[in-house]
Image 1 (cartoon, rainbow, N blue to C red):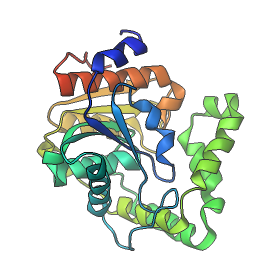
Image 2: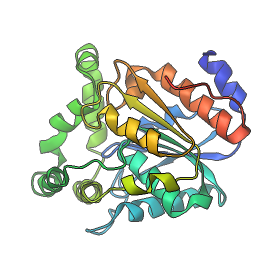
Image 3: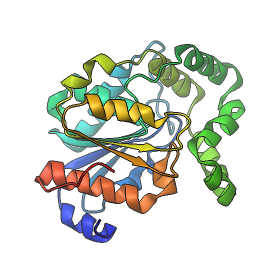
Image 4: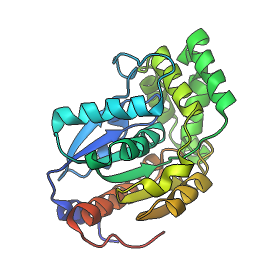
Length: 261
């Protein structure tokens, strides 16, 4: 693999790249995934970072349409989407609902059918009654591997502070959308070239979700990263940035992207 800086120089595209972050996190947490030669469009999910929450009973399509509307303000044409966790689900739904708007996808720690709808409903109720403060330790610890939690305690504090920028209702509505999300029967309809990245130690979205996603999505590649958790760009930032750069170069400029890893 070429060095990251060379990969970034090789992309050289102006097409915007929408960055959709994990549930409960501000977009800035994942904005650095996009190489500097691209136009990154950090996107705050409704109810995050001071934005208004969507109404109760909003679906993943509602979140996807909100993301695409935000993207339109930066560029009216097609765009690449880099999504992490919840943001990956939003990206997948956007590619299904408005395929003409999505030129390519990077799906990190994503799932086509997370399951555990009862658990997501309970988390939504807990966010409304006790607030995110009560949920923060469990949420943030599941974002990181045990090794990273031990090595970088300050990172835990920073992520907890980032989580607190999300509104309780915004978090709850997103949990409810996840509870009903299942596009496993529609993966064959995704037209956008897709790269799926999974952390081998992700306890929130185990890598088998990513494997299935890549297996059943046309024109998809799969990369499983050893020693990485739910936010693999924190465990191995250079590798993830290089993979994103390669995929953008391959899909938007038609350059080889390499094989499965």
